[in-house]
Amino acid sequence: MLELFLAKYNYWIVILLMMIGLYVVVARGNLVKKIIGLNVFQTSVFVMYISLGKVAGGTAPVLTGKNELFSNPLPHVLILTAIVVGVATTALGLAIVVRVREAYGTIEDDEIEEIERQDMAGDLEGRRR
Amino acid sequence: MELLINTVLLGLLGITAIAILMTRHLFVATMLSGGYSLTSAALLVSLDAVDVAFTEAAVGAGVSTVLMLGTLTLTRRREKVQKEFRWSPLLVVTVTGALLIYGTVDMPAFGDPNAPALLHIVPEYIAGTRDDIQIPNIVTAILASYRGYDTLGETAVIFTAGVGVLLLLGRRREEDEEAGTRRPERDA
Image (cartoon, rainbow over all chains, first blue to last red; front, side, top):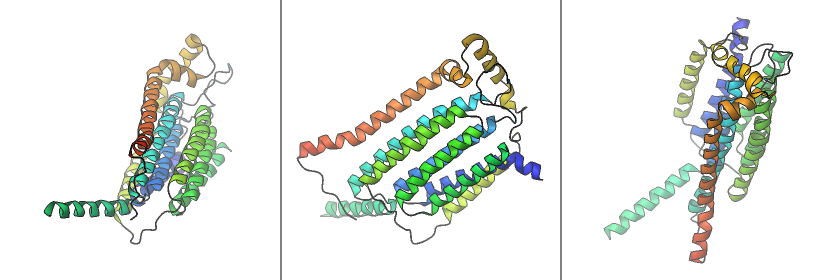
């Protein structure tokens, strides 16, 4: 039982972290908080990939000529790319948040929806006149 | 010992994530997310991914936090507290989590030296780095040589994101200058 728990412990905790991140993205209305949740989700995925590549008793994949048991270097390469792409999406998302704040004066999604609804009602009223 | 460090760091990550979920102050959440990235960088070192840990500490914990702090100075510091609790997000998250945990049943055990992912092409990369490319760091060899097109694509993505940010934030200043004034802000 303990063996099974230790064999899957990393994956389960990572899934828990991913779901906390997903919950923040879905349930919280603040746009900056949503992006922080997205970051939590992303970092958990990174840890998941690296956990999959870990070999018990292995070392970092650097050739020294002595120890020849390495952890899998391929996930490391993929995640190096993913980290940089993650920052690119964060930057773009935050730029959109700043823009939304300028256009609506708020970064809460229910308030934005309220303003949109009032705008639409105002348009209909104007057309009727 | 390695396993103990791994367990403790993962637990710390869990506590930080729950704190991010609970706090309503965006500055606190930003700082916690910086701490989360840094803790995960420490965890990556214990999982033998030193290059990734380096990048995560510099880019994930550093640059992301700076970007978020910049956004906070331009927007609000506090998050609005929603009055009613909605069940649908919790339901979606629980179902997704349960499906993912079901998926781990078939996955190889943590640290398994005979995992399928290790046996396919990785031995060729390691041998090729030693014999053909002849630099000590295998990750660098794969990143720049065997998977060079990935890195080229990554550069294209960053370029696109940079152009996007410039268009989003740069255009409004031109508009403001043409109009002479800033657009009046609508307060809800």
